[in-house]
Length: 428
Image (cartoon, rainbow, N blue to C red; front, side, top):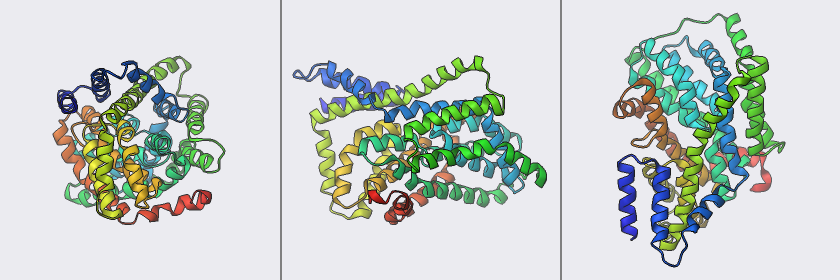
C-alpha cells in the first residue's frame, strides 16, 4: 500500500494537482486503507495542526504585505532604492535586490515579495533593455530573501515545530540573509558589463534625501518589528499584527493611498493567499500521521541516525534532501513532515536546533526558484510571460551564488549563533 501511495503522489504532482490537495488525498486514501483507524483522524489532525497561536502570524504577515502593496508603500521603497543605487550600471537590478531585502524585513513572505515587487520591477527592467531572463531571474532569486531575513513566516513555522525561540532564530537569519543579498549583487556586477546593463539617471542629492525621508515609515518597519521581538515587547505573532496596523495607518493617514472601501478586497486576497499555505500545512499534518502508521518516519530517522559521519556530512545530506523536496513541495508542509524526523539526529550530533532551522529555511527558500514547483519562479515568469525553462536559466547564476553562501553556512555553522547569543544569552 505504501508503494501505491508514493506512486499516486508522484502522479498527482506530475499532472499539476496542487500540493495541498495531493497531500490531503493521499492522507485520506492511506488512512481509509487502515481498518483499525477511523477516517475522522484525517480531519482531526488537519484541524489540530492549525490550532496554534503562532501560526496566526502567517495570514497577518501576508496581510501586512498586501496593505503595503495597496498603499503604494512598495513604490516608495523602489523610488528610494533607485535613487541610491540606480546611477550604477545595472542600477535597476541592484535596486530590485535592495528592495527585496527591505521588503523581507516587513512581509515575511517570499511570494508576497515576488507579487508586489515583481509586477513593478519586471516590466520596468524589460522596458529599460534588460533581457526577460535577467528581469525574472533577479526578481525571483531576491524574493527568496523574504523567507530568510526576519521576520519570516517559515521561521515562525519551524519554531513551532522544533520548539525553539522564534526571536533567536530570527536573529540567526539576519546576517546570512544580508550575505545572500550581497552575493546576488556581486552576480549583477559580474554581468553588468558583459550584458551592458543600463545606468539610470543620477538623482540629485537633495531629491535623494527627500525620497529617503518619504520612505522613512517603510524603512523603519523592519527595525520596529525586529526590535520589538528581540526586546520582548511583543511575540512574533503580535509583531505581525502590529505590522498590519502600522501599514494600515501609514497607508491611510500618511501616504493617503489606502481607501477604506478597498479593505474588503484586500482581506479577501489575503485569505486566498493564506489558505494555500495553511491548507497545505493542515494536510501535511494528516500525512505525517499516516507516515507514523506506516513507520516511514522511523525508516528515515534510522537513515539519519545511522549516517556514519560528522556534522558537516550530516548537514550536506540535509541540504541535498531538502533541495530535492523543495522542487515539488512548499516549505511549510516539508518542515511539518520531515523536521520532527531529522531533529533528533541533529541534536545527537551536537547541532543546535536553531542552526538546523536556519539551514533548512535557507534551503527550502531556494526551492522557491527551482522547477517544477518553485512558486516565486512561477509568479515571476507569469508576470514576464516567459517559459519556466527560460526563467530558471535567468535565475541560475543568482541561485548558484546563494548555494555558495549556503555552503559557507554549513562549513561554519556556529558562526551564525553570535548575534542570538548576544541578545538571548539565557538560551545558550
